[in-house]
Length: 518
Figure 1: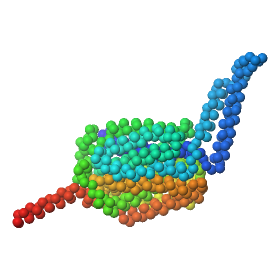
Figure 2 (figure 1 turned 60 degrees about the horizontal axis):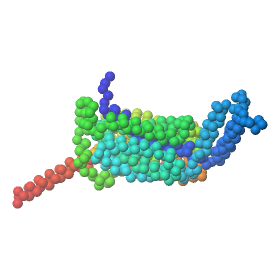
Figure 3 (figure 1 turned 45 degrees about the vertical axis):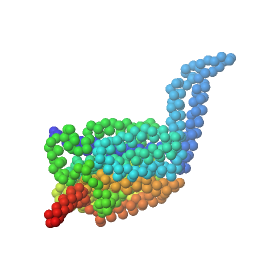
Figure 4 (figure 1 turned 90 degrees about the horizontal axis):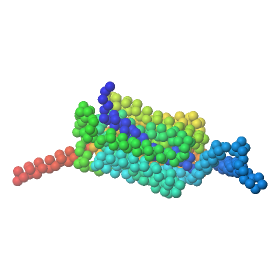
């Protein structure tokens, strides 16, 4: 059995890290289905009947309890055991009463307020994207990614408490989580650039789609947890899992191969040789802000990322509610069918990444064309699935089919914009990722706002049709722009320090020549 490579271990710990990252983002999306009182007539009737049942149960419970003792000629006596109710029967009524009370103790938030709760995570999420890349460049990905992940998990412990305090308190807590989480993705690009050879990046970046598996596992798991226990346990479990991961991250993750105490000399040599001089000293390189902000390849990656983010945040945030209110699935079914698409997304991302790296290693396609192919699938083909969902989604089988296919095709995005950010400037991949994330996270709250606006007091298939038509238009538009104008070749400003040194040498030679002439 061969020795396990350090970057293989790194892939797995990053994979789980991104799964944890998305547990924080989506745990409210599934919990809110049970947190909020239904607003349509059918479910309102259900609540009334549940309330009536509680009153009946309480009456019967009190009657049973009261007949345990009787009176004869003013003296109290205990009824015979075969007449009075058993303790197990009394306990059964007490437990049933508590369960029904929990069902009625729900928040009276309308669709607009729910959209605020779901979208608040992303309101300031964009603000820390570029700082995440800068901080990772200065202090290392190990510190920034690790702390941003685990602190957001610890905050989850407070969500049940603040939810009962006030909706505004919940919004504040989610905004803080979004701010901290914004550091994570751009920070990881800095580590990838230092660890992974160019022709292995498509496959390695599939570790980022631990997020997809996190969503795929979390939705059905959390659905069952809510059914068996209660919705606050969704947040408690997120905290526990995040803390365990953080301890593993501290042991296994290092910012560079050279810092890793257990990496083999063979693997270290392979990585350093493959990277060559594309990676400079990240602490001394000056960030070429002007070149970055005026670069067409950078902005094409922003556009490609925007399209992918729109579909993911729309499906990830809204799918549990869509399946619940439109197709009338219970919480467990909503969780399962909300999670399946993200599992398919990860599987498709992995196998497409193998194809992408094969095409690059064997010079079948240029790096730019490989990235265009990946983005065309993740955006344009995805948009066609959304269009089909809008037209044919009344059938629940077709609805889940199109949502699965749409989310699955988005998986090729790991071999598209996510990889291209590192291709064009590995020295500044974290900064570019931060810029893409700053703009690319906006669909998180924009899509939630649009869904809330379109479905406010209008939870109908026609309203959701408009949601999916908007998604289709965004995806196809972003995909066509990327395919027409993207470029994934290494940009000359990646090694700006070398260019600056060369300019200085030329200037010194010019001054020396002038002195000799004079």
